[in-house]
View 1 (cartoon, rainbow, N blue to C red):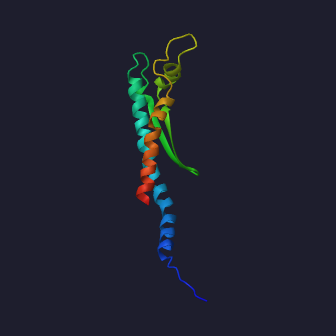
View 2 (cartoon, rainbow, N blue to C red; view 1 turned 180 degrees about the horizontal axis):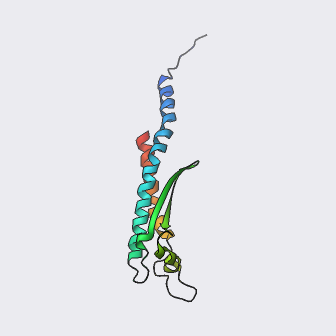
View 3 (tube, one colour; view 1 turned 90 degrees about the vertical axis):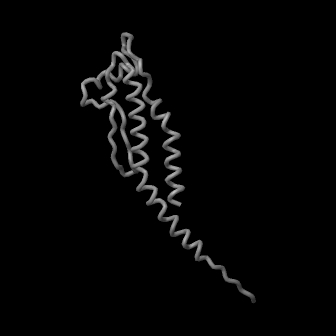
Length: 128
């Protein structure tokens, strides 16, 4: 009977490297999320600064934290600023009319979604 031998050392090395990719990507994700959160905050502030009646631009901030599932950034008007109380009216309008001059803030996150996805894809590519 004739046998043959296969050298799998390169596959073994690739397997070890792929196991390390997750850690490298995970370590870089907060930076990508922070960059996207900053862009969303800045776009939101720019739109809010155009409102003549609602001075909420400087109240838009973001908080970031690591969680059990990964990392998150919460972006929006900070209630520590008195003007932030007007954000709902500025975005969606009041019960008796008026307001609604800034529009739905979800659009700022939607506008950055592709940029964030590309940043994550670039992180994975560099990690490989």
